[in-house]
Image (tube, rainbow, N blue to C red; front, side):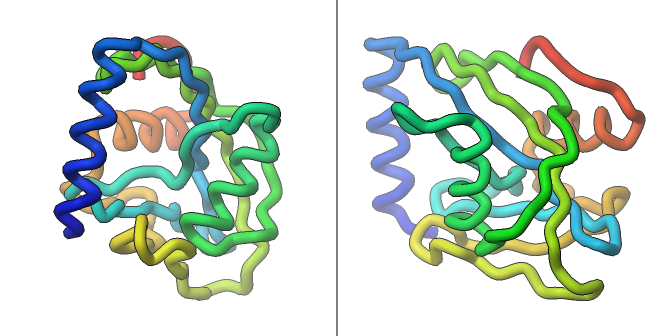
Length: 157
């Protein structure tokens, strides 16, 4: 893991605790033709997450998720099926609203998942929905469970 990414993350969290910015984030339950889910592990954390990130100023949420999928997992052709839910988090000191999209990657069956940004993404891989790594973040695990049971979510991240 890149120690400097961890330090930058800690510094950002300290600033956020003081300034308490309101942010909007997007993440995707990105599935392939075999119904495997894409998960990423960033260089600054040990847990697996849904691919995604922050919405930039002047950017729509649809543009943001398309950009984030290209940046994190090199997927440039994904079809958005629906919104799973909108969630709220204050865990990093931000007033963060996260929109979870359900999307399907336009890839042949059995395709490998690539890291888009090798500086930010330590690992990216497809996993069967019922066999995600034990080190998957709790919020990611909850979103996957909601998807699998057909629940549209909202509320706390």
